[in-house]
Image (cartoon, rainbow, N blue to C red; front, side):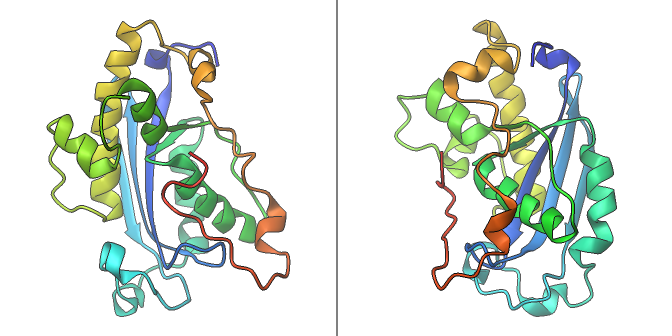
Length: 213
């Protein structure tokens, strides 16, 4: 918590999902790794969610596109190795991290990483902005997204956005995770518990992109 950002490794994660309830699954994941202030590695794959994809309007991924993709269990070890020892980042971290935790919990394990949220950072850093959606922020920071709403492209753009934000934070004297406590960051995943995916309920909890932020 007290180590400066320059000594930390970050992984920006973006997931696309079959829907937005706690019963839905990840159908694509993109990850971009940051170290020493630059992007050093990337990971991207479609994932066969083993259920029908219902929210194709958001990302355009259809069920036939993931028929031959690996299931999450088959790539879980690659994901775990990619994020080991890092601080995670997402644009609305509670949404993406909750789905990540659901997938790992189904395999009998879990995440234990701190997570930063570029949406929450943007709201604190730019209260004058009328919007804090990813597309609006990328436009204001003059970052071009070649393939919006696809996990790999979004993760890459979020990484470049975070690097720009990080420079502003450091200039303001905010250069450790602990220094962001006043903004309610970093998250430590307490928003999601194992009971969420196992309890019987007729009520579907909706997880929106603005959930808990």
